[in-house]
Image 1: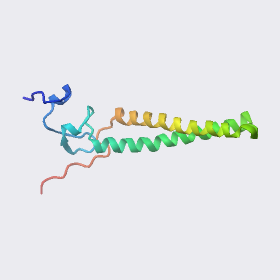
Image 2: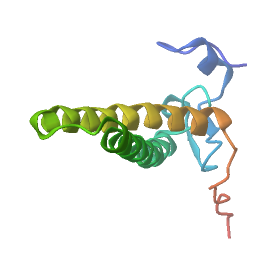
Image 3: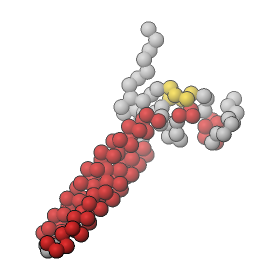
Image 4: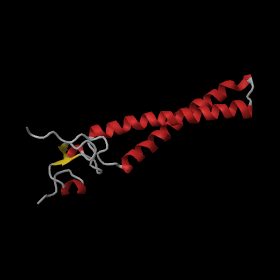
Length: 123
């Protein structure tokens, strides 16, 4: 019924030309879908949300590190620039790790159609 299409991965051959995105419930061309049947706009929305969560995690990590440095290490004024650099590095690395982790949780948790609006009916 469905033959292998040109320049196609094996999983796309099992679907018709259009499929329903499991997040937004809109019918889209299969070429716009990924393996989890998310369309490009839903993936972008998940990336933006994961970015917010990632920066939040980075801020928490950097704040905790700065507090630990200030209270436990008690740095001198001579090398304060190095400690500030360490906190900024922790912020950036923590935000990247948090973003990737949040994106993975959003994607593979895959609570289907949580934010979906049902398709508009005819009439």
